[in-house]
Length: 578
Image 1 (tube, rainbow, N blue to C red):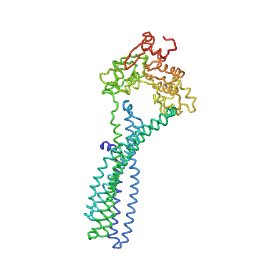
Image 2 (cartoon, one colour):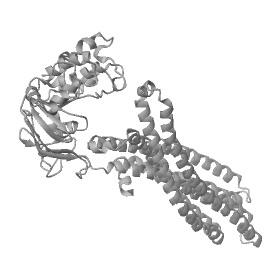
Image 3 (tube, one colour):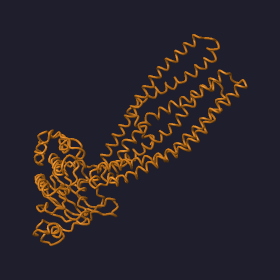
Image 4 (spheres, rainbow, N blue to C red):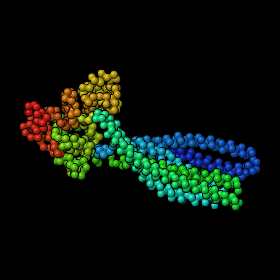
């Protein structure tokens, strides 16, 4: 893990090196004061060298001014190194998330992912800046101060240094407990963020069902976990700091007793004793800095581990030798396809499915919920991968596992029941289908989706902001916008996954006209609960419990007097059947 962390310094090595050099100079300048104090007490003052006293004072002042400028550089540019590393990690994490398979997001909460991208990486950036700086400056100060103290009196210095192993033992003992406690607190923070993200996203549902109290209860569960985890982490931190502070206080007791005895015995004089008292803080202070650094290390290290947990999730990759499928005609075939989301076959969703759709034809999938219809729609763009020996899906005769996912999905358009629109303008969301499209092409797509007249009636037209997930639009308007997006993409294959099931009958009829226009000349796979919308399909397949029970046209299936006719009768019991 440490090697991977260090690798993020490479793009910023020049600025990082200057930051470390500035920190080193700050430490060296810090040694000037005790040295000058020793000279003052043992030379300049006893010998009444007033000129030397003034010169020494001015020299210290100049060095302190230089140290001020160095500290400014370290605080500003040093933090920028950490910030740029944080931005680099966040960029890599976002890019990696975009390449992860659907299965990862099935088991991950958005709030938890956001915590890792924000809170965790902030702690990592703080460690990236302060960690090396504290280690370098503290180490240099300890060595320099120890060396200088030895020049005053070796044995007195060794007595003080004898406390260091005790400090290391105490620090190591409590560090392990701090690490575990801080990891638990980070997990609890992720739980809170996930709960808040869910509640805020669903605030309209909460208000509609007057369930604010229920959401409060759910939030308090995560909040309680956070308080408990924080209590453990602060308890561990309290033990760590109180114990280590006690050991450093022992340093001062040893100095008081041992220094007094050495002065009494005549081993050192009063000037040396006074200098030692001043100088020993130059030794204790960096030791205390290293102790405080342990807390920052735990924060940063646990944040980096959580960052790596996502970065180490394998990306979805093309098969070796996968080729660009190019522009497809649209012939689709599923041969003996079986699939389970766990990949172990224990929860099989599809059981030996075989289907064929020719170019320009429409195949409708109908049946009860949970039968596997949407799974078929997810397998066609290769959102979930078929296991070896579980059948084959081909497009224009090519196994979709042998072509690049990007080229395959470029040829497929999807309109779903749950339309997702991005925060931004109407223009932004239509152009999502083809970012490089011209203004004329965008407007043409909007007209074909029957949304242009509505958009031009808005005050800002295509530049109108639609709010988060299109909250300022009605269900029908959102659906038309998504249809315009697909028109602009102009794919050869179209998937309509219950595209109108969430709309009222009047709106559905208007949207259906847009969908009928969209389907012309395209190979279309339709999932529908409302059977009235698929009567004109070239073929209808009834899918239940992962199997195809019936296939045929509307008329053929009605004549069979089977499952399809039963489903149709349930929906139109008040109308004439057939």
